[in-house]
Image 1 (cartoon, rainbow, N blue to C red):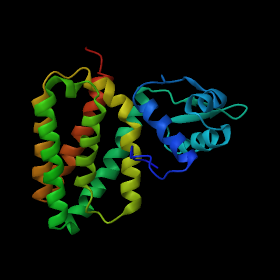
Image 2 (cartoon, helix red, strand yellow; image 1 turned 180 degrees about the vertical axis):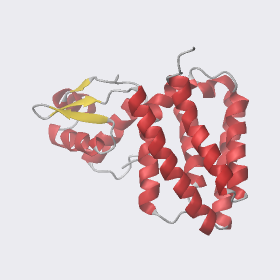
Image 3 (spheres, helix red, strand yellow; image 1 turned 90 degrees about the vertical axis):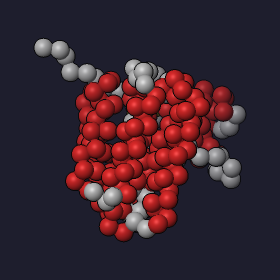
Image 4 (cartoon, one colour; image 1 turned 135 degrees about the vertical axis):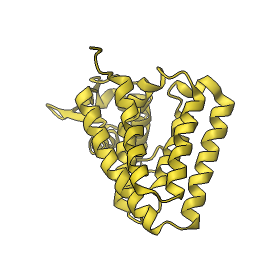
Length: 225
């Protein structure tokens, strides 16, 4: 379970995992915070068994880590972690683009344009509020990035890309607070859409890597000489 989707028809364990995932990504729990099973069960109004199962589900997403005596903590953030995450996302998303450029159809192209349109309209309405780690904007942003590689015909690649995107959310929140120009957000994505529709893989690879590395540069800038 990688997507922040509606919790209708989910099991208790899935609901616990989804709620905790949302709270971690939104910053309700800080990096390194202890996640007590009993406390979470009381807060979520369910038993400890589904909460523990939900926590185990989030281990694979890298949002939490297991500690001694069956405990859990929110994963720490660091430059090394973000650099590793960024490098892997670039590999996955560039390969997804390559496959999509080779086999993407009219539906794939239409989804790229539709997700870009929705994101553009949101930024125009929200203005500077879109730069504050807004989860509504981030959902639209994720939709666009998944659309770019949506023609790859590889469910596992898409699932991996989705998981890595979610893991980077806490870093994006930090970056968004440092941005000052909402229009620049759209410009970068318009360029990505343009090269995708042109199926220009060399240019797309450069833009995808540069786009992903923006978060690293903002959150952990290189020291001035």
